[in-house]
Length: 496
Image (cartoon, rainbow, N blue to C red; front, side):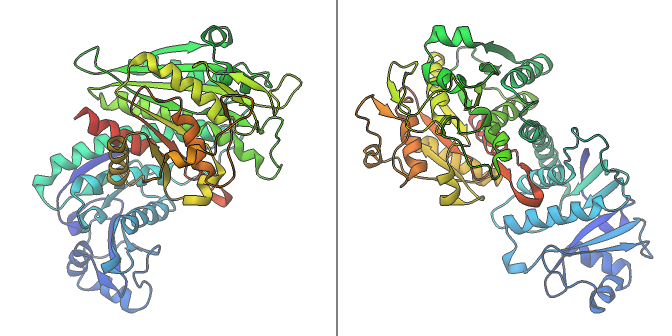
């Protein structure tokens, strides 16, 4: 997809489709009014006939409108003007791109980017438009023998800004958004692949390819190296699978000072999670291929960082394995020794993510990091707490939590800060080992984060539980690519 930023009147655009907004109550946006004047009230006549009332999520496509050089005009419902905010804006972009995909237009000019959003600048509107459009045109059909036939693909989008002086800001935002969109696409592709394809070895190969094509440094550790490091918790999860585990390390060395402390991203890479001996119910178990979306988001973020050439040192660490039942699988009641030396009593083999992450968090100490952020589809309790809107955020440092919350707000890939009070640590006691791998059901997402916190004492640390945001179920089933946008924005702000 090619994006360009321009400033100019909508009625003068020679393009496949001009996209303008209409508020509820048939109130025209500024660009729609310009079109209406140029067509001597034609748009207003269409609205008066009842074809469109401006309700959010609706569109009307007009062809060959007299007086306009554009082939089409797409009227997009914006909802109530007083309720025009970030979510309504993104919905308008999504609605527009869905309508455009049903046409034969190969290029379009969006005037939705000149809508007023309180406390949001041109850069935000352009970035969200690019991300929304790229999300709208995304398709995953590489596993189909005959991909569905589509109309001529939309190849070029021009985004309008109100003033010529905004063009440079818009162009910078579009370039940044395209880098993030590429990272999101990689994360979605990896998440959507079936587990018989996307194995730990496959993820390692993807990381090596990223390194080769984007100037990153890659290291992949196998089972023997993990044994030498004493990663007993990670290896315990891998024991039931025929697929050997991998610890994948990607480094972006972009800081002006080579020895500058890096930010380390740790992504849970369980390429399929049966629950192990504590077997999950059969219903919707196919969605456990998405249990590596934390790993996918780390690889996607590393691609975005490389494309943006951020002047920052960033390390991506992915412990990758399957969690399978079998004769050699770890059992409830087993006790394992982590890389840190602490012992863990396995009370539930389906609480495996924290086991592979705790050894990866200990591994991260060798970098003397400025901050560590782990990303994991960790707990079903997180879905109950926050649904599918916000990512759960925990941190041992309030300043790091604030950075991530602000990055989520800036990228509209939001996270919510939850407590890690000492009171919750009381739920993690074992009669036989230093710590159990689960606490009580109450506050399950918090006690899972408390478990991880015990292995992250050496640096500022945050944990993003993406169990509710990493993928969608139902008719739109598929990986979302979250929280690549949040992480990319966080790192961009750090680099500045």
